[in-house]
Length: 420
Image (cartoon, rainbow, N blue to C red; front, side, top):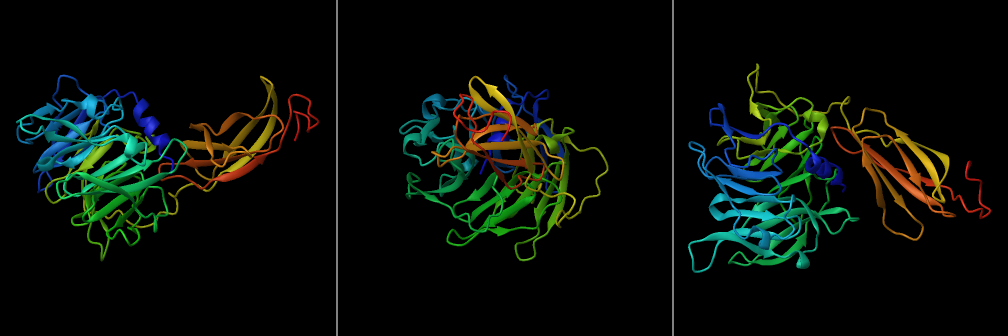
């Protein structure tokens, strides 16, 4: 599961608008809350919370907690942060439950916001250490102190992402990590939500899934009409989603699942094509949904509401596996080079090119970007395999795999450098 494209875009984004919050009351009326702190973040990297207990947010560098929607009071949670999460710079994610206090990760270590034993002071205390965790790159985290957390993470740079859930002792201390099944998933998940007691929910593109029994398999929910930007909820309350147009939908039930529109917020133009997951949905729609992100505002246009967002749209699907063409391009620094080009059946916004050498078992990423061509530098006298996939605002295509025949820029008797 490759989530690197989306993460690198989000982390390198230069935002021009400040981060804002829109929350809805039980009647569906929306209200904006300014993020009033001395250092205003340009965007949020992660957020969680609800109307009853407040929210916690992070821009990847700092973490803030807000307790009262009627009179917002923002507090930065910085005590012992660098020691508990030493790899935190730009990588922070938050989850948890306000009553049980926030939980944060720097992508590998996990820490709880807890009262220091024997004192009345709160600070970040490390819960699990990177050195003992079976992963190195957390891209999504959910859960609480009572039942532990679940994470979507990679074991290493070249590995694929997996879902792990934590088991804890009665006092909330970490016990062990368990791998969560991927059975039933037909797409790579982008975000997970829920908890370890009632199960997990996740999404990718327009697809969403739920897992209620860890010994069972994931169940797919109705396909949404637009790409999903964020998801919240659990298997007790059901999922709620925020889509690329800023519309909020909740699920009627698992027995007769349909997406029902619950509200809408303003989002910047072009958001649906940006593939940046920098706007988040929190809370339960019955108590009032909360949308958090840069440029978010109260929607002032006409909104009929009540639409359903389910159903397949044949004109808005993931791309087919791309068509790939390869042409020799001489030598560069003594190495054979090739121009690799590819095309798709629909307009795409991002591409992923990997290579694999005969003596390696793992694929290595050599290009992630918006172009549909790449100047490839190979090795002398070796057949090399490449694979390419593309994505649009719905999701990733499958891979197309091609072999680049061996060539030699040192006159080793193989085909000339200008032909295959």
